[in-house]
Amino acid sequence: MENIKENEYLSKLNHSCAHLLAQAVKHLYPNAHFWVGPVIEEGFYYDMDLGSVTLTEEDLEKISKEMKKISKDGKRIVRRELTKEEALDMFHNDPYKIDLIENFPNDEVITCYTQGDFTDLCRGPHVESVKECKYFKLLKFSGSYYKGDASNKALQRVYGVCFPTEEELNAYLEELEDRKQRDHRKIGKDLGIFMTNDLVGKGLPMYLPKGYIIWESLENYIKAKERKLDYLHVLTPPLGNVELYKTSGHWDHYQENMFPKMEVEGEEFVLRPMNCPHHMMIYANEIHSYRDLPIRIGEIARDCRFEASGSLKGIERVRTFCQNDAHLFVTKEQIESEFASVVNLILDVYKDLHITNYHFELSLRDKNDKVKYFQDDEMWENAENTLRKVLNDIGISYVEKIGEAAFYGPKLDVQVKPAVGPEYTLSTCQLDFCLPMKFNLYYIDSNGEKQTPVVLHRAVFGSMDRFMAYYLEETKGVLPLWLAPNQVNVIPVNNEYHLDYAKEIFDVLQENGYRVSLDDRNEKLSYKMRESVIQKIPVTVILGQKEVDNKTISYRVYGSEETITVSKEEFLSYLKTRVEKKN
Image 1: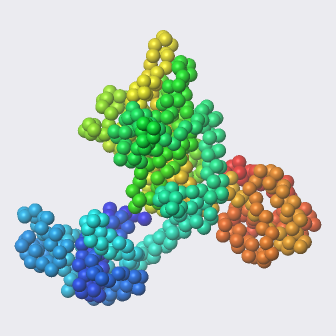
Image 2: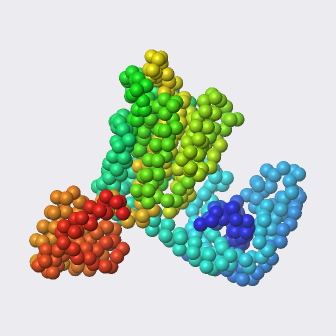
């Protein structure tokens, strides 16, 4: 949906509805005090102190009913300017407003807005009348803290949204319901893909058998793509000596995102937040000639980063994850062709997986930031201009983002707009002149002299975990045949007469490499069919007497009511085609 904060009228409408909420709460709970009630991307919220009252769903219904009553009354919303003294006097019984007012500069114009019997301190602007706040919905409530500080008093927060028409409100509520059904945490639980448990640790997901099948299928897919491009896959440990990260610069630039160091037998180790230092050491393990380059080192690598518990979300945002990582060691003359190859690989994968809602961002340094970025103006100018040239030559549209580069070089980020939540980075490719110098990497050129290689850091899936979350939400868990953990479900109509033939078909499918299940429970056919749909199995085979007599196969595709009958050979050909085309 449209960002409400960026739409002038929707922003005013939702701001006014926040005041309507506060007015209704004040009617129902006269001792209530209010902290802040801002407009957010999808509506508004208000933080409030209700004393001993703890809100319930029933309370939200009462508040909504009172809001509708006030809105119907149609009072005008009137703006008034106050001096600091007048404001302090007007809100002398409200400690939260007093705190706000006392922190205003003495010469600041203070404004309040009045609607009927309610006045609230506010900068505005607002709509003309509460009558405009007619089509709203209180969505949820949660806890919050005064000034967002956990050491301060606990408050209660109510979220809501308001639209100009009933149709727009209903469309948004339908979208919310669709998001709930798409949420990868719900899909992951319903389909048995992954689990979390606080005894294991927050942000540490565990993949169940079905989830690991999806994981392994994606891993095999991307590795096969990479091998065709002469990538060399390696396996490195998920921790390293602190000195490794001091050498790379990550200890200085990234330490706050890392887990604390561990001391063992006089050495200091840390769980690795990224893989590039390990791959630098693999390159340094041998002497390389210019004829060896480019060298493309790839790994599905386990990393650990400390994320605040409040930001953790299923497998989308976690504390341990696996990157589809690679580091390409190239000469300066090879930068353009290798960078173009990475971009084309990303586009090829997106085409295979039917990913269409994305755009490119070229992340550049902020020249004025002398702390975050490695200081080498010539390096940065060359690197940024090189990436621009490649993108322009390929003909890809992109936007430039100042201050979003990595500390060691510019990067290309592919931003996707997922079905649930705000956009984020899925794929990335970063150009790095810095780390090879820090690790004293070199190759021997055609004149027999040492030269420093350039490194391209790239991740097509980003992290395997986040990509799985993204893809589950895009597909609502209805995965394509090649990726589905259970590809075919075989159901005999009657176990007494049809089970032997069902077992025969089950064996044939297994022998041909398909992931297949046999539902031989003594349940009604309708029940088994419904279970197959609930589990989102792509193809369901139904075998009755006609199929037994004719040695045929009848099947239904998920989402269709049509039953198709074919020979065994035709069915195997159909499955093979769907897998190969990734339909």
